Length: 416
Ligand SMILES: Cc1cc2nc3c(=O)[nH]c(=O)nc-3n(C[C@H](O)[C@H](O)[C@H](O)COP(=O)(O)O)c2cc1C
Image (cartoon, rainbow, N blue to C red):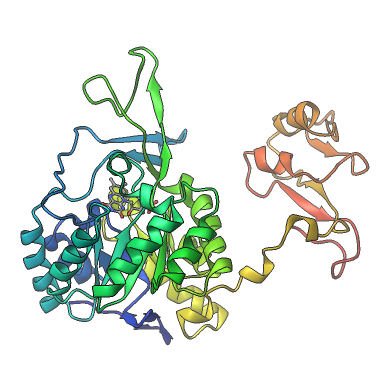
């Protein structure tokens, strides 16, 4: 059994609404937590916590489709995003109850959270809570956020999209729960802060965000069928992986601005840097699904090592010291400086002499880049508006940098 809290003088343990996680890395409710044996194996490899695949009462009949996954990949085959149309667990609740007891017996120091979802009926929610609570599980995560299948039955994201229903169900659960109640929110709303405030007022102990983003990942143009195709048809599904990280970061920052609750950050995390990004905008634990589905539990080794190294380099002794540090730097757009001016600066040694930067500057910018007789890009600083489009499209990392040209901030020339 591996419970890693101290590494190279930094303390990776996290207090999250009274739960002591050995480290902030948690498996989210999803295929990596399909059953008890898998969760035990993940704990043995160093994961700090795990949320079970969402459990429901037996009256919620669950039959999954095959297939139920589809991807968008980059030119080099790297994963951009994953769509799934998977439902909650299709394994019997009584089997899960036994497995949860066993996991807690074998791994008492790891945090095990039961994800719950059932019909929007008070008796059903309270029965489910009582049954699962008796196992000795550490906390509940209420799944108010699955965007496919369940909303058709008035549950999942249908609950998280309505602050009133979300707070009513949170209250029902809080009436019988003797352990912390975390509410998992959906990004498929206009203002996630409003829902976060509603469940905070209803007594939620913490919030996790985000669940998947509602999408239609693509269409097979030859067959003229939406994908993933199930016998010729598909439905809208939930998007996860790297593409949703910016949405998750924005949601977590909005929740941190709107409430005082601890936050578990989720969405597109695959490296320790991604985890730190979430912490800097308010998350004290982080959850991963898609990265584990694509690389396996072993990514925990790099996550732990990378976070410990980062903390050591920056002199942080505890994870909590990182939480929210970037929040004061998020401001209203109108408060952003208009005096801070940068222009593009091309490093001729790195320029590969294609004309992409000049072409896009001509066609979608300010015609500030010319290709010289030596085929190297040259920037006319008078014409450059500093938008950074050329830097974004340049295929060579570091070839185009943005140079500070006013003297208002610090010592003059500065690269961004
Ligand atoms: C195939 C699949 C099944 C999922 N099942 C559940 C589920 O049962 N309950 C739940 O709360 N979230 C579920 N999720 C959502 C994940 O827990 C997570 O919130 C989401 O995938 C974003 O994180 P990621 O980008 O690290 O994957 C599922 C995600 C995937 C990809």
